[in-house]
Length: 472
Image (cartoon, rainbow, N blue to C red; front, side, top):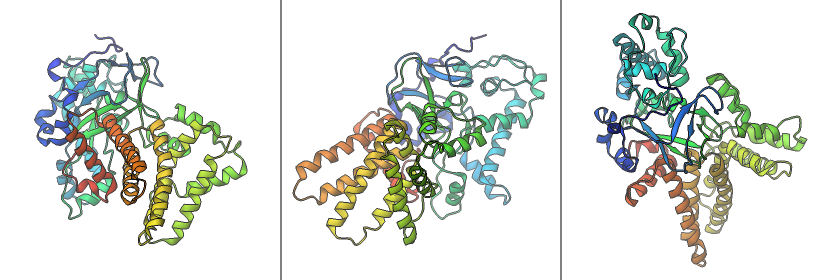
């Protein structure tokens, strides 16, 4: 038996070189089913433990890790290929895509139980301290990767493992579509647009060891079904590696409500504790309570402001109320950054309102408004850099800042020597965030392609359908 706190690396033959990530992002052949087995990397300075973590088990570092350093690259031990789900979904009319994907995943897992595939079973059962299987669940790295085929379970004991047991494992540990919702996937699959394969749902036991925090220090992306995880903040030796189970762009009350409903716990991360300290109703001044209420109305989602004049006025008023709240002296700078990120939707709605209103405006007014939005977006960027660096929303903000500054520079016929360094600043900030999220790529052309890809995906309607690359 291996100690559950011991970090056991995968066999060297399975160690993928994280310096070759360009091949995964831009070469579909390297993401085929047959190549996924050879695409595995685990940073030698991370381990899974039940000590010194937020709760349960978690992942910690044994040395300082820098932002942008690769933590692990793994394939699912079992997953539902998108094309199989699509085919089943099209052949029936009563089930949603989510239900079809879940049913197919459970079928695959039941087949693993039936066939007693020890290595995969070991990785799945390491996720839970199940009462039905009398064993001491081991959480070594090799076992979580599905590379330990030690026979730990007798056939008689596995008979009692039901589909319901497996469904509970899935609900608590599976990774679904991050960038998409199942509803948006249905819209894509029923539209005349070119259908693109994408990650739907899969079991990644090693990744499931990471605990939640509303202020993450790790971020993931997918190349096909392959999950690629990097540190998005500097992580000191002995610290826990954490990421968000849900997007960080909602206020604390909403985040806690969703986490309690979907994951069964009340978040007490540092960010939640800070927000709860300064935004409690019993201590907020009356004016601040009113401003918070006004701002919250237009923070629930991104709205279409193109044909609704009333929304434009209300959204501008809501944004002004948020700024008044953030300028309050009783709120610390740390709390202000957290709150600003929590009101990302309101920021985006405000940006959309102002930018949409500029169609047909004279150049001087456009320039003035672009500088206004750039100033607001800069504050949001700084908040993300400290709270949720290199997240999807952060990349979107950085693209916007770069585009606005480039437009200001292009139309500036007098002080180009002043505006040019600012364009370079946003270019480097955008590049740095990409290298943190996606890793240090092998050449400058790959980095450029990466930035073009995310700009297409994030800054165009249904941009993912327009990009020649399929990674998320």
